[in-house]
Image (cartoon, rainbow, N blue to C red; front, side):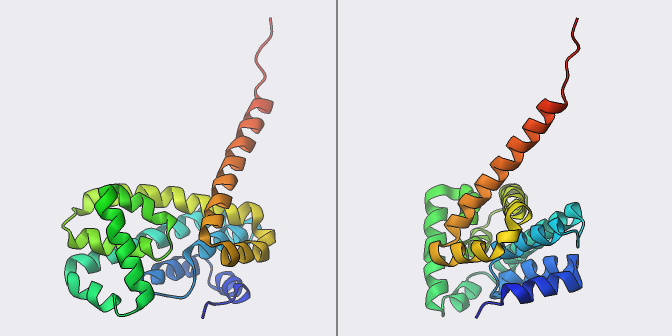
Amino acid sequence: MEISIASLLHFIEQYGYLALFFLLWLGIVGLPIPDELVVATGGFVASLGYLDPFYAFLFDYLGVVSGLTVGYLLGRWFGKPILRWLSRKKKIARSISRATALIEKYGPYALCLSYLFPVVRHIVPYIVAIGGMKFRRYALFSYSTGLVWTFAFYMVGFLFGQNMDVIIEVSRRYGYYALGLMAVLAVGGFLVRRLVIANRSYHPERD
């Protein structure tokens, strides 16, 4: 059963940056809180002034990256037994099959594509680690994509956080692909806004 948004907001308001970090870090062990909503809530709380926007984003990103790093290390240390243990649940078994198919088809780029799929993004690090991918290569693909992914959902919360109930309803009814679309629109809107502001502030000298 997933935690309510009210409880999530209260937890982040009470424990601040550490709450963002640990909620995302614990996502790797199956904490029933969607990563997307934690990151977006961090942006929302920052937009209200409870947290500094830069540090809220930083701890969001560190939480995401640390969780995926734990997954990679567990895959390196424990190997296939951990996948057999995870496969006991049918839902996880389906995610493992999906993650394996992504890796077979796209190779290391599966690390980038896996961010589009909840649960799968946590499984892929195990599998690539078991397959012998070097950590430096893993970090290059995973951390860079994680930065873009975190920024996108952070901006969803920062710009549209007042409509958090709508965001949750959309995510539950249409899946997190809809949230992904919202994230793309949020980033696009942010960039357009910055471009407009930059153009307004630019006054070329006239002869």
